[in-house]
Image (tube, rainbow, N blue to C red; front, side, top):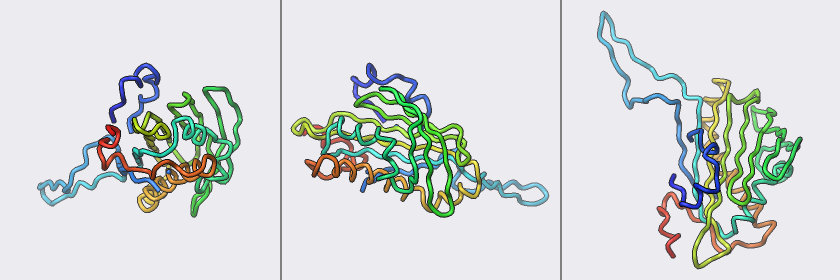
Amino acid sequence: MVLSKNWTSIVPKILFSKPGVSSFQGHYINRNGEVIYNQCQVYLQRRKFINIPKPVRTREYCGRQLVGYTMEQMFEVVSDVENYYKFVPWCKKSIVLKKTPDFLKADLIVGFPPINESYTSNVTLIKPHVVKAECLDGKLFHHMLTLWRFSPGLKREQQSCVVDFQITFEFKSAFHSQLSNLFFDQVARQMEGAFIKEARRRNGPPTMEPRNMLINNNHDLKS
């Protein structure tokens, strides 16, 4: 995803060191760092063997939306981690342990059958451009990275911005990895939708309905 020139001076490169930061639509990506073939490879020796790919545990979802709220308004919603339990689907508890203007640490509990787990999230804040959350010590994940980026929207509409949403994680459990094949895409979309809904509750109706920029290929930003 290409950032505008002003991003390079605002956002530290460390925020994007890990590859793939509301209802929305995006791309669902499965990735394990290896080449995945469309067909099984067959080796002929004394008998035929089929090379079955290893189960993929890493999951990634990316979305890019033009919304009818300002960067500041969206940043305030996404950075309000202590109130996630009130509006983020399946978040049962969200307790902020430490908070500064550019960082916070929080314990979160997520629960949806058959998962009910807690994890600690380290959140980097660059107002009003970036909210980056990382989990490295949970029982549920080997790692989890959630990245939100906010950039200017339409030139003719000041109350608008582009929201880039990215979530990447790897389950520790093979069972949870298989389960995620069924629900992860839906969960990610509902998460995106929840933040837009909360922005509406706080700020009133948007100036426009969300537009999927991955489909529209950024043409809307020219007008």
